[in-house]
Length: 185
Ligand SMILES: [Zn+2]
Image 1 (cartoon, rainbow, N blue to C red):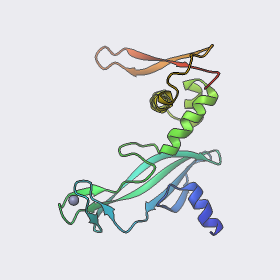
Image 2: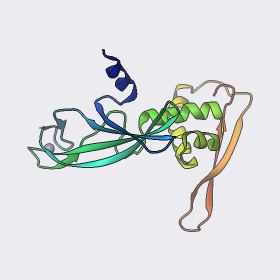
Image 3: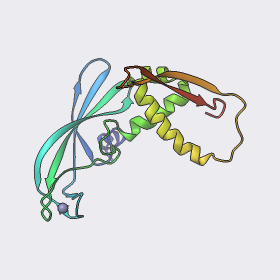
Image 4: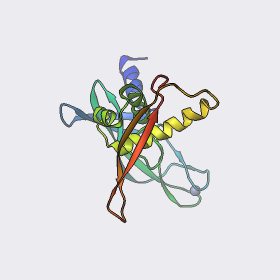
């Protein structure tokens, strides 16, 4: 494996090829990339599609690299299925459909949460909203909770509270309280 291959494998999600790096500021880099596959499978009927219909560009937040905030600018191909004629966008391993953050970013967020303890501190470090921190942490913790069912309660608990969203009807802010078993993370 060449050093270049090794680096790009460490940096990039599988199947993505880095085309160029754009420096946005001293803190932020944009990694422009494309997916390198010959064909994609139709969403509606499992048929191989080779024909590219058009493109659309998406921006995905990815895990930090060398203390820089990374955005993946992916020029996604849209394919036309030869059988059912429907047009679909290619999917990228490591990014769930409809999300604007990669799984690596979301895992990093949980890791930060375990080490910084408060939502605000994590939001500052990963530079996103409190709301996103809460969403991702709850999603990840629920998975971990299932693993640790039937274990005894901890002896100390950490409580954190912050504003979540604004209620569209009343205009009032709603709040979220999180309880963390701090000793066992
Ligand atoms: Zn199809």
